[in-house]
Figure 1 (cartoon, rainbow over the protein chains, first blue to last red):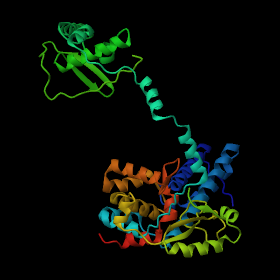
Figure 2 (spheres, helix red, strand yellow):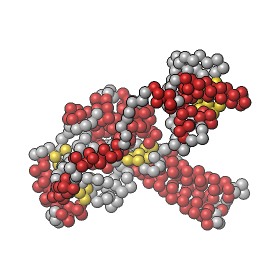
Figure 3 (cartoon, rainbow over the protein chains, first blue to last red):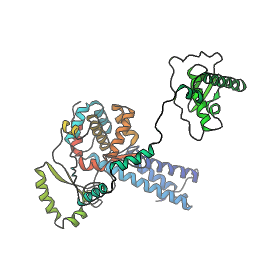
Length: 263
Length: 163
């Protein structure tokens, strides 16, 4: 039996109500709510109330979809009633509380008493034997395999003396001069910007090798009290210290910074 | 997935496969093993249809007839706390008719084991096939639970269990 739509009813209000019905039904299907949370009779009455308004194809589709969702809720209500009458029924809150309060040992025993694991049999078949035989027959002798590995090993590590380190500029007077130079550069930049300096802007150089070297020196600037490093989320900033202590800071924290090859 | 389907048995063993299975069952009983026939409802609901019209084709497994003790479970690689958490997770899902949002299940497990461990445990149960998760994040009982766990016995022991 069709009801005449009220004057106050509009298409927009009808669509909104139907969408709400569909959303509630979907939430019930996803087990967000108990199936009896929704008054199916009221839902059907809502559909019936707005049905005379629908003319467009989309609105009729919406109506059919809502009816379909309501029928799914009815099916879930039926399943719940059957489930409640079965031996498996227990209140979820009760089960959750039992789980909290029971000891681990007792819970494990409860499970083990009702657990009948599947038996597994491992067996060698003719095919598996044949595949194994082929593998060993095709495998090169161990000496051949070691030879291959030697080629790919690359140059062995060597020890470096202080001359080498000084040549690289990471030891000796050159090192200190570079450190002070970088500190002055940071001070100038800070004076110009009047605020903290972005780590990557400061560390970035013309090529990757130079960037790594600058990052290396920056780490000493921070460690020996020439600059302060600030971490805010993913952003790293540097703040120069006007009067450097030249001593490692107490309670310092290591901050690993990966330098991507493209920087 | 392990086990043999009905049509596979018909093809390999013959039409009288049920008689063969009966005989095999008698032999397996001496080893404390038995053949188990598992049928899953197509809808994935807990309550199976009595008329059997919506049932999938059954699978046959060989399972342990008796049960294991704590020491034996440890010997086959299970930790006691993992077994305890699995027991709670399965019982909670059964109480929720076999389905619950992942966040709800993790919340229940987290109250006993903490948030981080709860996530790890649920992942372990998913990987081992005891639980399943769909695209919408809804957890349900996995094929292994349906094949290996006597759910009515678990629920009875769980509700009767001393605290």
